[in-house]
Image 1 (cartoon, rainbow, N blue to C red):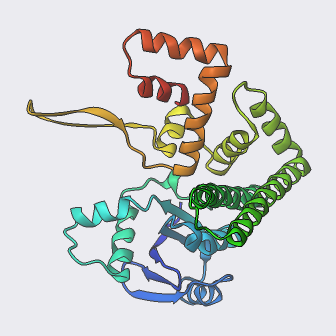
Image 2 (image 1 turned 135 degrees about the vertical axis):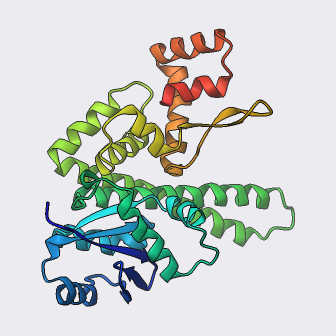
Image 3 (image 1 turned 180 degrees about the horizontal axis):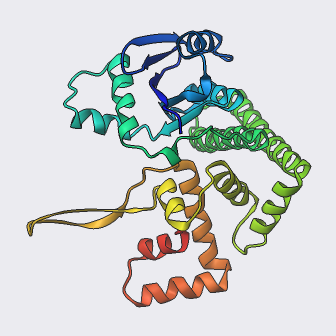
Length: 302
């Protein structure tokens, strides 16, 4: 493999702060990243010899990930929780975009060549994920509004017209949720392989359409290869704290993965112990062995 030129990038809403081992520079973080592309061509000419290192900072890193995909630029996408820990190891007391870019650049010595590759993007899956995250957002709004309506109904001084408007808004949210779900099902139906995968997931007793779409996104978007990766990705991996003979705490799940998906799979496990006989038997056997109920439930998920 030819020598790669690494660039550490700290991604923010408005700009990309970069460090290439010699100098610092920043460019605007916009849709096409034209300024960034011109700078790279001027400095390096051959884009195939560049390797970008940046954090997966949600929507702010989408433009950069799409840029790497379309321009076939290699990249390594970091878990955002790793950078602050490395900064502590390096003795960084201050935190600025430039310092973060330098810290991210240091990861070039900690990653293998196999981990550096062109990011893959499935447009169909990204559309489903956008609809799904909006769907979950609407559910949160509806639940909050439902609680608020309950409080208004128990308030004898609440105006009737106010309650009527809140009830209308509640029904609007329910209708919009239904539209989003129908749109997701339509997109999935248009992709034959995706439709087959969803049908297979829905065939599992205890897995509904919501959880099936959640799992579909998980397995296709993150390209997990084994159960251990799934467990870590969702934050179900167990962390322990032990030092000598005086410090020892019971293991707890790390909760460092995707919270939305972790919550949905937890609810799916609750449903499974009631409706799936095999899961129910496995859960009861763990309880009979003395396992705490939550630990037994986590075992169904992982």
